[in-house]
Amino acid sequence: MIPLLNLLVVAVAMVMLWLWSLRTRNVSIVDIFWGIGFVLISWVTVLASETTEARGWVMATAVTLWGVRLAVHLAWRNAGKGEDYRYAAMRQRQGARFAWWSLLWVFGLQGLLMWIVSWPIQFGARSPAPWNWWDGAGLVLWTVGWLCETVGDWQLARFKSKPEHAGRVMDRGLWRYTRHPNYFGDFLVWWGVYLMALASGDAWWTAISPVVMSVLLMRVSGVTLLEQGLRERRPEYEAYMRRTSAFFPWWPGEK
Image (cartoon, rainbow, N blue to C red; front, top):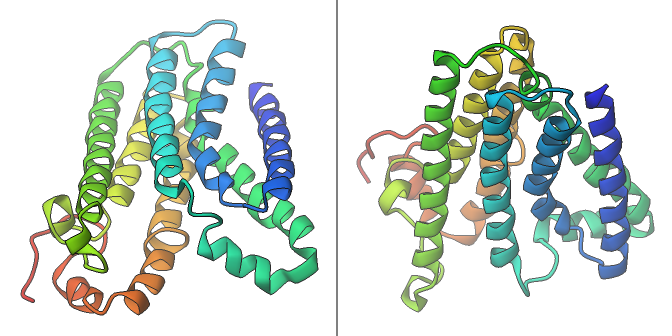
């Protein structure tokens, strides 16, 4: 079965990535691989299928555009900065056992989540069902999400590139309407991918994929985790939180 093949591919990739992290003492590389892992799963699914209809090629291409953009963005943003402070804190807490601990709880857990979140691709992309309006709706939703996160990341990078903005809070462009346009874009991307899987007629149950991604973005590794640090490092952030929607875009309130 292709899903089992993908699970094996992800497991091998994560072990190799873990070995590289031991050599470089940098677990942050797992974040860069997050998007690439979905690309890998998408093309293994399409190429290993006996027959692939238009839906499969469209889904694989959409996930590739999303995954490559995310990986390039994270690699560029993290270049020369060393290990992310979150992983550095984990390393310090775990001490000598961090190497084996990271294999299970960093690389292993992310690999498992990657495999689960990609279920719409693994089960929907192989369907022979004809293209229909659910596919179109999913593609529109994916496009809006991809543009939202792409523009949001570009606006933030441009803002941070100016010395006079050092330590300031970005509250312009898309960031005026949501504190996390990049995460909201990811949210739309994966609901869009799910709608394309739903169009296949027999992958409705893969809704667990966008649900898991939504929980991760809003409650676990996304908004919640990031804002803990931002509130401590940037005094202006509290006021920004009061006037700006946390996730879903909305008109800003009073300062």
